[in-house]
Length: 255
Image (tube, rainbow, N blue to C red; front, side, top):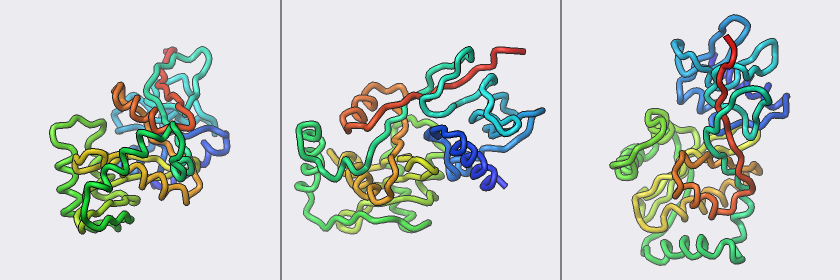
């Protein structure tokens, strides 16, 4: 039933003209194992049956409710007289902007993606991966990329990387050196993960391939936030976002 409940929730978000956040997608709900529950007059998704916090704003009589404990609300959406705390940014990009890298604002990015290409002497192929395709190479790349790092929601990350419905790989001489993972909702392509083998400037090239490929889908891209990391915030700002929104958590203020 989770698929139907996720689609129904997103349909209501669309009907209310609200902007879905980075985690509001059918595939994320499934990969994260969110549970649909009813508590009194409220119903919605939680991270587990014993959680005292709604993951998204719950629904009451066909409308969204915010005066409760909620992990993440809608994009750039705060409610007067309801306690809210900043959770993270949401970097929004227009993929079509990456089709023309002329001009000063793209100077550094343009140079970096060329640097990687100039260093390799093998054929380069960027293409979608089917489910379970190249599983050994994907696992090997994941181990190299994640070694020594700390990650938000690592279990969900691994499910997306190993079993995601939308994965695109970069092969150099037949070897997988980079992987882009994404999903979608009615408004955005959600750019979830960008893996690389640690080569200098490969991350920029992976993003270039992802955005130019995404331009065909005619949707804006939500590249998530910065997780409180100043370096990641500066990096995403240098990619010339269309806009940068905020997402808030909400706290119950009544007994």
